[in-house]
Amino acid sequence: MSTNCTCNHCTQDYCASKVSLFSNLNPTQIQEIIKKIQHIDIKKGEIILSEGAVSNRLYIINKGSLKVYNYNKEGKEQIFYILSEGDFLGDLNLFKEDVFEYYAQALEDTYLCTLSRDDFMSILKDNPEINQKILDYAYERITSLEHLIQTLNSKDVNARLASLLINISKHFGITTKEGVEISLPLSREDMANYLGLTRETVSRHLSHLQHDNIIQLIGSKKVVIKNFNELKNLSL
Image 1 (cartoon, rainbow, N blue to C red):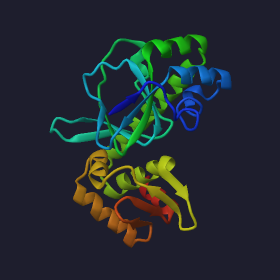
Image 2: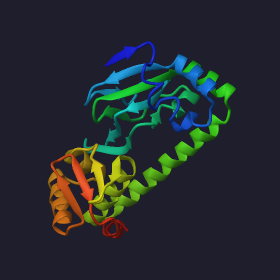
Image 3: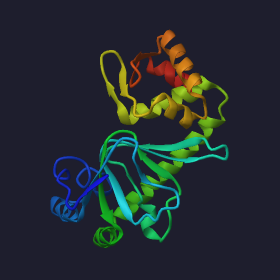
């Protein structure tokens, strides 16, 4: 992990100008925020936050992706969220002195922009409308967890897998002539950990979906959803 005192990426990409927290601020306000931001480079596989760690910074994903997870009683990894460009974490921990309850690990080389608690609170004082943005984001995460619980309670493997592919496509998919092409942020093992399945089961059922012409597998890191409606029906 490497840290720069100032963020040279902020004027070009996400972070301050495009992250939902600051989307309603004017250019002058954005520039003031950029002055307070530090930049962190994280290598693939590196853990940025661990369970029990004191979290006193806001972390914004400028480029790349993170998985947020913990371990169940059997010691198996359970993934809760996949965060991508423009997402952030550590926000709720800034309102009270508390420790982080999960792990956050880079799924690829990732660039984070960070704000200290004091700087964030200063920004919040000058721009109280950000409070509503935080509440909206917290609601989205709760809804996402509720959906995950419903998915895990489903006994049908195809329903679990279809639901995951649809969810990933919202953040990592692009529409092409062949269908919705997804650059998968997750390995087969990660997909299994997210869905409470084995790696072999995930691979086998992906092959079934391809055989049924619902998806097309391109290597291990890309999937094309060829029949989105049928995939959606499977997820119900």
